[in-house]
Length: 113
Image (cartoon, rainbow, N blue to C red; front, top):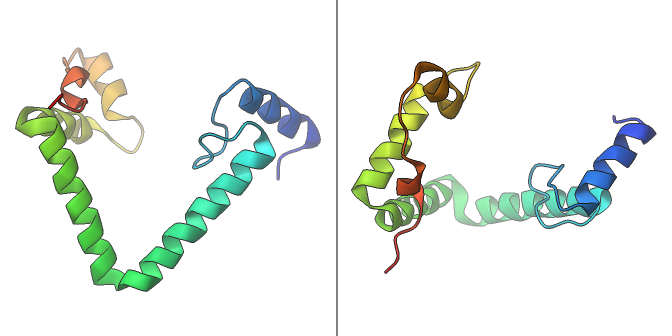
C-alpha cells in the first residue's frame, strides 16, 4: 500500500488532470480515480456474468471489427506492425524508435466519414 506521502503526490497529480490509477480516467482526485476504476471493473465483471464467456468473447470481437472498420485496413496493419515489435521488456513504440523503424501512428486515428 502507498504511504501517505506517496498518496499525497498521486493526489496532486490527479488534481492536475493526470490519470494515476489505471481505469480512473476522469477522476479529479486519487480517491475519485480509485472509485472510478473499481466501479468500472465491477461493471465489466457484471456484464461478463450476464453475457457468459462466449457472449463476452463475441462482444470483444465485434468491438475489434468496428475499430478495424474505423481505421481502415492500412491503419489496422500499421497497428499490428507496431504490436508485433513489442517484447516482454519493451513496447512496440520503444523498440521501433531504438531500431529506427518508422511507424505512422496517424493511420491509427479514426477516419472522418
